[in-house]
Image (cartoon, rainbow, N blue to C red; front, side):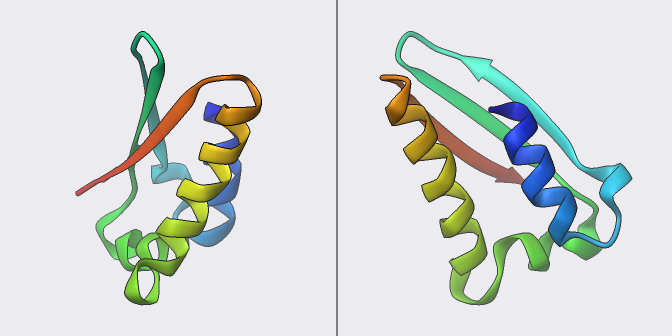
Length: 76
């Protein structure tokens, strides 16, 4: 799933080398912390948060297929 987040975000941003995804495992929930270059933060969030919402929906749907839960946190 970490690779999925990296692939999607690297396709959106101008600086794909600055994309960093940290995976934190819990009992039932996995948290993905996403760090991008400051210039790319707006592209990842999108207008009114639509891009971030779409990425969150994608990983949530993928995690639910595996009987788990996933959360995406975008760090500044």
